[in-house]
Length: 195
Length: 222
Image 1 (cartoon, rainbow over the protein chains, first blue to last red):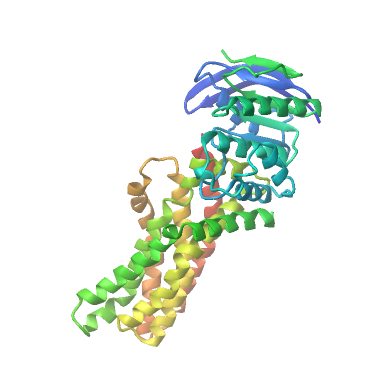
Image 2: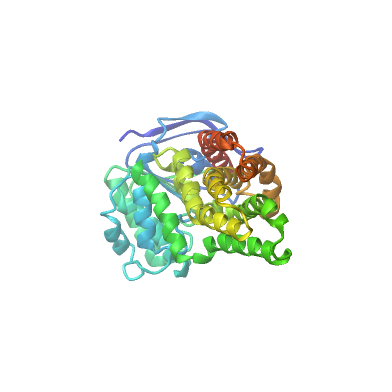
């Protein structure tokens, strides 16, 4: 897998320029921890990197293709009337990949017992876990995660840190925004602090 | 690609099975409106049969408006929209699949109810058959226009107030040609030309609006 190079990137939200002249590299095995105060532009930056939003200026080389990245935004991408299992199978078919890994992924995220319950009836943390299960259901080299730890308990936070460590060890790369520090050191972890 | 289109349509149908109130609203509303016309008019009033094409079509137009606002709302709220946009399948095809399943759930029942309502209003057989054709050709156009407008207003709070004003002028030509075809059929005149117009409108809407709607949805995330 090739790394990506962000060159002189500016991003806007509406008519407001949030980030200007940003330069950084992400290589295979890196976990980039994007930090910054509220409104610093973490979400906007990750949306640009995932391809949901065009950059105002500058470029990303090479831009990760849509079928090589996992995007997890603030919203979980789960319909409240469908169970985690149904939501994940739908997602797999939407992206044209096999749904074989879904059950193992839910098991790993500790949702085996809740897999048939409507997502709307799950707690906030359980919904976040269900969304994170996508990362394991289909292996993809790029993980772009916006506040993946929001609503997670200590156990799940450690689990996510473990998943990130495994992902970087297996040669993947992740861009993660989070206000909390990770519970233990992750190999390849670097900080990107947005002013 | 086919798998993604089927996934989107299958999800809509599964959700409809689980939340019947979401799609049953339009057909029930339609039934009530058309029945009210027959009940409030004088018994065996010949004017009713004359007005039947308008009643059936205006009723269809209003019922079509009912569910349109919700077409993409839940996708924006739960984050499915982001995943749709990131799917390798071109978004217009997925949008078309969504609009298609919306048509199947909320407008296809109108295609069946409409001619029956026309019989109740005293319309003859030729008129009813033509009416069926106009509904078959016209309601998909209504749904495509509605889907486009829903995509444009998905980020707007209380879009339900804005949508009818935005959408009804665009839908008017469909109702005009459909009413014209049925009136011509009832009067024993040739009615092929307005039907061709309806078909042309459908083809135009089908080739343009899914693309416009997906551009609007992409814009809604900004």
